[in-house]
Length: 351
Ligand code: NAD
Image 1 (cartoon, rainbow, N blue to C red):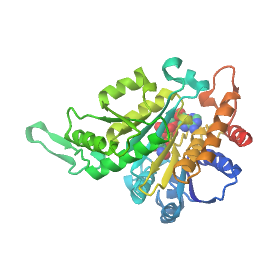
Image 2 (tube, helix red, strand yellow):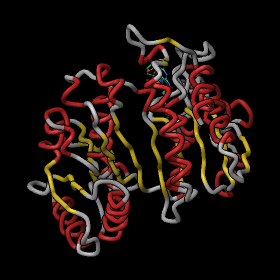
Image 3 (tube, helix red, strand yellow):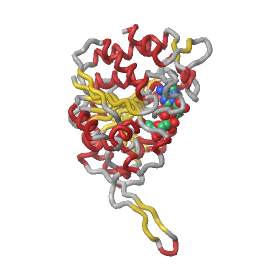
Image 4 (cartoon, rainbow, N blue to C red):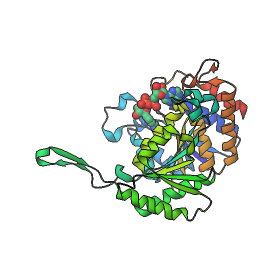
């Protein structure tokens, strides 16, 4: 198993090294190679996604990614900014499916902004299409609108093949979970969504063991805060998924706990925590490494065919939380505050 390790900027290196320690403990036949990305890529080679880094990512079975970004790069031209590295990797590797679990561990239910009984035990997965929709549709631009000044316009767009392939990812993921998929759209208003609903419904016939439901996106936004535990897998387009996945992540109240995966048609993928490079705490040993450790578990499950090893990591994370260990971001009275390294070491110990 070849893994490209791209720590990136800020807390990236601190959290990725803990995830690597966890992976190493498993004793699997694994080769890792590291390369700079984001601001670190710009410093090393004048490019957020240096050629060598991209080549390494392309040759790997999976990519373990930390985070990129720092205010000092905000004044660079767009093409040189750290976040271009993620967009470049998505494009070069055809990463069209974004998997974002939102799980609330019983021990952390108090960290949510919602009442603990609403979120305790929440375990859902949002499958977001990542390479189409209004973010990439043409035409787009700004133009003169005469007496009304300028106007901006974008094109929402999905074809049947794009919808079918993301639906398959969602049905397949549901098969490994509670076997329910809720497809989210705006079919009462949008043509794109009407096609979306037709294609997802047709594809569902190939997955007779999966229960499919449909929901309008505005209702889904409400249901996520009213009764989030009704969901197992949500599948949706790029724009709706962008918003709903951030909303769902906040149900957990702990950005330092949430992993993500972006997959291509061959099942290769990029695995990263959903949080950014947290420059405010970088280098202080305060960052929560669990989102990255859980991203490594997803990598084992979705790209490397090592579901049992993924289960072991997830069980070890639950065990250290049960033990009462907390980094500062999830600390509550009565628990024990630990730093990045101690948290990582505790997971390794449990393994
Ligand atoms: P952020 O996610 O980096 O941080 C938001 C807040 O959460 C901060 O207070 C931070 O300290 C805290 N936090 C984040 N991760 C944590 C962890 N593992 N443990 C403990 N606390 C944690 O978002 P931001 O501050 O808006 O952005 C900082 C930089 O990260 C920017 O340059 C932004 O562009 C970039 N960014 C990158 C990604 C990515 O690499 N995928 C995603 C989002 C933001």
